[in-house]
Length: 332
Image (cartoon, rainbow, N blue to C red; front, side, top):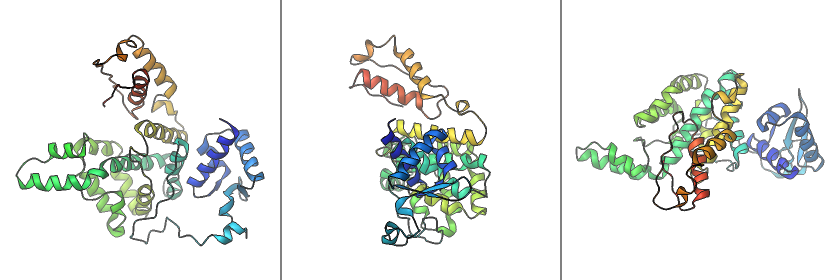
C-alpha cells in the first residue's frame, strides 16, 4: 500500500469515528504498527489535514473538526449530535463509508456508545448481531411492501403464506413485520418491544441465528442502560444493501469485526474464521482437476462448506469460477 493510500485510509477511518479519536484507538482500528501510524500521522499533520490533540496517549482530529478558532470551524454551523436519543424522526445518515477498513471502523465505532456499560470483550456480542440484522434488513427492504401485500392476500384466501412470501422476497428467508431498522427510529419509547417483535417476524432459520447470538440478552441490557435507541440509530444510518456492499465485501467486513472482537477477548481470530489466503489456496486445490471442464457450457458442480460462517469459501470460489469462465453463474 502506497503512502497516499495509507493517508486516505487513516482519514477515512477517522471520519468514520466522528472526526476525532485517540491515537491508540485509531491505530488499533487500522491494524498498523506504531511506526507506520506515526509516520502517516506526521505527514497528514504537516500537510494541515490533521490536528494533534492532547490527553493521555494523545489524539488527532480532522482539520475541519477543530474548535480552537480555525476558520474551517468558524465557517461550519453548529452540528446536532447524531447520538441524541430524544428525536423521534429518522436520523440524517452520515456519508456512506467505503472499503472494508472504513466500513468496519464505522460499525465498530458503536463501541463508543457501549463503553462503561459493557466490558470490552462483550462489544462484539452487540456489534456482530446488529451487523447481521442490518444486512438482512437491507436485503429485504426493496420487497417489503410487495411482501406485506402478498401476505394479506394469501391469508385472506386461507392459504399458508410462507411459500408465496419467500418467492416475493427472492430469498430463502423473509420477515412478515411492517417494521424495519429505520422505522424503529419513529417510536423511541417502544424501541425495545418493537425490535423484539421485528426479530420474531423472521422465518425460523433466521431466528435461530439471533438465538445463537443470545441477542435477546443484549437487547435487554441495552434497553436497561438506555442505549438501545442510540445503537439502533447508528446501524440504521449505514446502507448494507448488496448493491452497495457485495457479499464478498460483507464477508471481509464481518471477518474484520471478528478479528477486532477476538483481540479484545484475548483470542485468536483464526479460531472463528479461516483467513482468506488459506481459502484461496483451498479453492485452487479444489478446482485444479476441473479447470478445463469448468470453462465449458452446461457443466454443473456443487461446493459444500460444512462450517460456513462468513461465506468466505463460497464467495472466493465464485470469484475463482467467474475468473475462469465469465459466463458461469453461482448460487448459494
